[in-house]
Length: 115
Length: 113
Image (cartoon, rainbow over all chains, first blue to last red; front, side):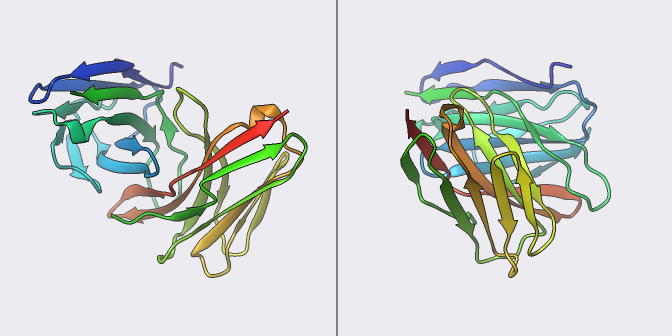
């Protein structure tokens, strides 16, 4: 298994540009999520999905869109990049059923700089 | 948004020393987690705690779930160079079927050989 993969690893954008960060997992996990990591802030949840066709907002959703057309893929779209979106972005996935905790597996991250 | 208060923010220690870090929250969590992140990688789960008062070990790591369910600590004994990294605590709860993790700010551990 490749686990959780993210592309690209690095990206530089100009203010106002749009782009899509890709995330894929091959573990048949229902739950997928996107976090951003900023210095001194830990990780904050942007959007998440509990299954194909279902998405919801996390803690910091503004400026980002997501869709979940397949179980494997969960892309994150920046509609009009702003310098405040300079960050490291992590995708994560896990099983999700009942009330138990399931370990979330994180991808290696995408480092995004918006000029 | 809600975050956990994790301390200390950074630690500089000698190899062989013990390390202690903790995390507090104003909210109750059902599960407490400790992650380690190495440069260029995503966080990796070290220990998960499921019950108030639970004390769990994973090799040289020991973590406890606070009685009030609002805090947790992580100890690392006899540190070695590969312990270097950023350690995050996280609280877990389920909200409308979704797994929600709230992270602390992280503790950056540096070890002098």
